[in-house]
Image (cartoon, rainbow, N blue to C red; front, top):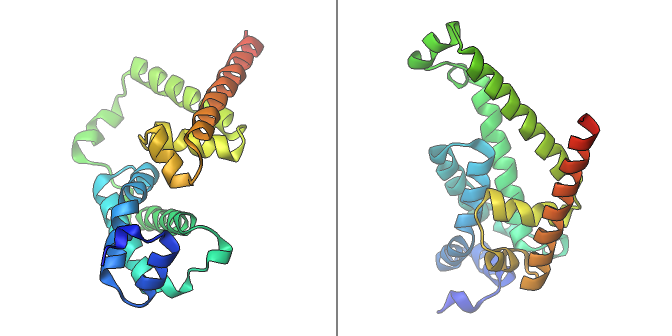
Length: 192
């Protein structure tokens, strides 16, 4: 049976009936998205791979809980990924090794280079400004921008993932970039 012809909802029904090939097809469709979201959240490839495996294991075990009335399969998968990444971050913060400093870094913490500290502060401030500007965008634009710039998706891939026309995605990204530019320029003028 060719599972690639089935839509996501049909795949979920088949996964709930323990059809391994249906899970394999869903994995082929969304493993890059899940991994990208995980690595973006936790910042570590190995942990992101573990999260990706765990997400698809949870999909396998909980497929019967998916309801098309509550949203698209991609939304459900993204939600599982988000919560699993949050759990992983929390568990790292609780473990003592999550706070440990590597030996080669310890020595550099005693006498930091003043120029490096200034540079780090400046970078942090720029990041905060950009995050604040991004938070001002409408959700659809923020989402399209995140896929494009933080997860490396092409416009066509974003359109497929979100189930939107390619032109809509291009417009959202263009408008988001224009709004960010305007917001950051206004902020620079206000500081001058």
